[in-house]
Length: 288
Image 1 (cartoon, rainbow, N blue to C red):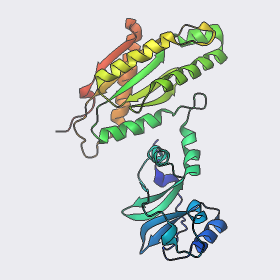
Image 2: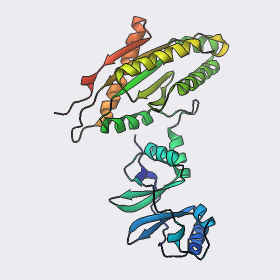
Image 3: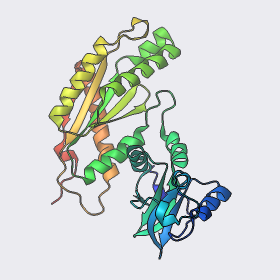
Image 4: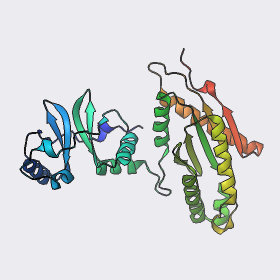
């Protein structure tokens, strides 16, 4: 299930006007144990003042002199992953939340970390599958080329049986680290479940196949725990998006694409090939 900023934002807001004193802003923050205040004038967000801003300003100055005027905001309907990405990119601790040009809430880094951690796989510290689904929806809306890469460990049940589940877990942890080292700004990685991992590749099918071959080769060269031999089968499904129909269920399309990549992986195992590709332009509904 998707999680949106509007579901976890704080709606009981403390705000301050631009012509109030810095001293008053400091007092409000102190009394309410908060690190920042949206600055509002005529119901419009005009800035934000943080504890860092206050430390650099004289207490008798007005807020307008100390506040940050170019405020980074996020919409109420944004996902928690979009909020996380924006906070990390801008290196900020809080985001005012806007809906219909009105300030409706605020989300802090601490609250966001608390929520995002619920969607992180404990063993590998990788996101769970919901993260990939949300990123894929973003790419669909941008009408981008993208590909789903479904990664499955061959005979993992045998590895667990012969070496024990503790060793098996360590192998999965190693695989997670290896995959994390392979991805770049065009990739989004998650642990899908069990011995399965998923990569959303923001790029053409041809480039994704090249990337998948790189993963296969890296797996062969990797020093696995107890010199256990690890082989992967990768299923790839991708297609180009040319438009979105009104009311279209984008998440259903993404889940369908993931399922096709999973089936490709299963077929690859039956055919004893490392990479099996489904060129599924038709699996994503085209606009008329």
